[in-house]
Amino acid sequence: MDEQEEVNDRFQKETSNNCDKAGQRLQANRGKTSLQLHVNPGKTFSDISVTGVSRICNKRCPPVQRRLWGLVLLTCTALMMAQVWDRVSCYLSMPVSVNVRVTRNQTLRFPVVTFCNKNLFNITSLNELRDELAEEMNETSQSVIESWDIPDLVGKLGRDAEEIWTRIRHRRELMITECFFTRGRKCEDLGTWSTIYTVLGVCYQYRLNEAVSISGIFNNLYLKLHDPETDRYNDDSGFKILIHDPRDHPIIDIRTHGSTLEEGWEKAVRVTVREFKTIPTQRWPCVKNSSYSSSQCVSKCFLKALYNHTQCLMPYMKDIDGAFCNSSEEYKNGEEWEKNLLFYGRWSHHNCGCMKQCNEDIYSVYAEAAVTGDSTAKLRVFFQDLTFDEISEDIAYDAIALLCDIGGTLGLLLGASVLTFIEIMEVCWIKLIAGRKKLLST
Image (cartoon, rainbow, N blue to C red; front, side, top):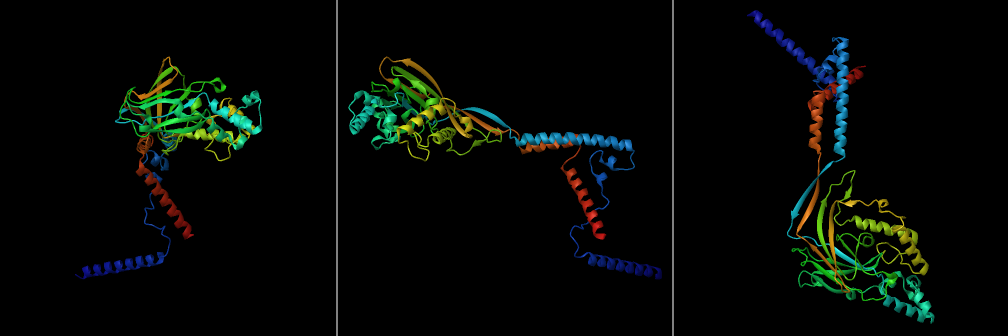
């Protein structure tokens, strides 16, 4: 019984001494940096669960075996890094897949139809301006009066180039003899006409107020045109027709992309719609703004390039800040630079940096022409049916696919996973703390 009590007393004394020592150590360490965490100081790189690392870090292994495993591990690591770099580069390039679907809709948005008289100006109105100028200048020679061209009239009688064009334009109501949209409905009942200034003079465009719900050659736009002028400016006749998206601006497109309709001919134009929904990528950027149009951007780029040479505005340059050309020399210079830039290759839209819009409607036209034998030009614009091609893009390689490929590469070449890299970070942290402890102790 005495021996048992002696053992209990000895245990209590040892426990008390240990607690006192622990308290003293805690008091001594209070206030030190939080980097001194409870870690396993014995864990090293040889404990990492990557095949071959334990053999390389174990000094008791034969040198040949350690070198062999080092070569294998280095090769697999290089292959792994190359594969990961390839997958990351592929992900950053944002590859897309294209989906094409034919969709039948209840309605379709009708395109804008723009037409210009290729007989650029009204000769009757031009002669009236010549007579007014002759009266002002007391000129009586008819040959001199008839030789006056548009540049000779600019700046005279207080009229700039834009006022001259407005005065000698062709009147829409005189050129359009008939205009119907669907059976028995006049164009003005369902849409609006507007005036637009282009490189082909003063033109007109028709814009439907709402989407169409019926199709067929007799159920859409029917337009009959006639030029009442017998005298021709620059001996040109007929009409230029452009069918385009409502967001596009036909300032130069009417000249470069329009088609000709001569009097005595009838043209039936079948329209199909292709709707593009693209994704902006680094290689193929696009603009998401729904009001943006690449055609408007190119037109404005051309107008700015022309203004840099003329320093005055031609009548179709209303989107540019400045004053209209107000002298014969300025107008002639504008005509000359217009030809140089637009027709002689001194300007290219590739230098404008205009991006495509991400959401774009392209109207493809298929025309059939026939001789009518009369003095009018007839135009029919219609949808064959209410279907359209919907072309959309999707991301072909997303973040999930990237992680799966990287994980497969790590597992195949190194037998590693995300937890393995956490384990490596743990060992590095232990080594860092151990080194800091040693530095503080010295």
